Every structure is written in C-alpha cells, then in structure tokens.
Length: 137
DNA sequence: ATTCTTACA
DNA sequence: TGTAAGAA
Image (tube, rainbow, N blue to C red):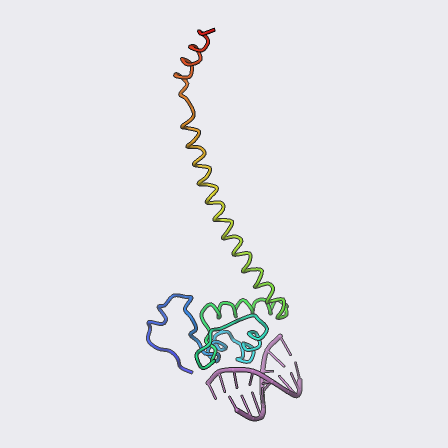
C-alpha cells in the first residue's frame, strides 16, 4: 500500500491527522492489522475514519501504539494498558495546570512586593516624622 | 484492500 | 492475547 506522496507530507507537523492506512500503521508499529482493530475495540485507540469508514492512523496514534507495546511487553493486559495511558494523560494535564498556577502565583507575589515599596517611607523622612510627633507631647 | 464477526492456539 | 479465516 503505497500512500506516499510528495516530500511535503513528511515536512508536516508531527501531529497531522489521519495519514496511514491500517496495513501501513501495523507495519510501522510491528503489529498485525487485526491487533490494531482489537486495540481500538478495547478503547486503547481511536484513529480517524474516512468517509467510507476506513481507519486512518496519525503520527499521534503511532506514538500511542509504541507506548502500548511498551506496556504490554511489561506484562500489562489491555485493560491495564488502557488505565495507565488514561492516568498518564490525566497526570500531564494536572502538571500543566500546576505550572499555570505557579506562574500566576509568581505574578501575584511580584505585585505584592510593588505594594510594599509604595507604602514604605524612606528612613530619613521617617525619623523627621517621628520627631515631630514627639515634640507635640 | 478494508470492514467486521467468528474461531482457534 | 494475538492471529487467521470467513464473507461483504
């Protein structure tokens, strides 16, 4: 199945939409097409579909297939693989949110320091002010 | 060539 | 779990 067109497709970003038909995707992943169909039916993968209903695997899908291979080789069954990938995605999202919050905290802290500088009175002026108050007594 | 279903090691 | 054969 030679779906290779010009070099333009190769230069495209790593996250292009569906590109490979199942036979090519299986070849690149070192798996059998049936195995890819099984993974999809078990919720490990969801490649795009053409209008006719054929699967089209993206580079993102291939990365996921490699991750699946790692986990299955480690001894996990399909359900285990599915849950690990799910948790990894959740972890990545939480880490991203954490970074956002940390950035906001940094900005808030800077603003607070600016407030301090505005309210503080230079020491020389402060002494004068205190003496004047003492004289009144 | 691909799809899904069914069956087997 | 992964593979193969069947039919569409």
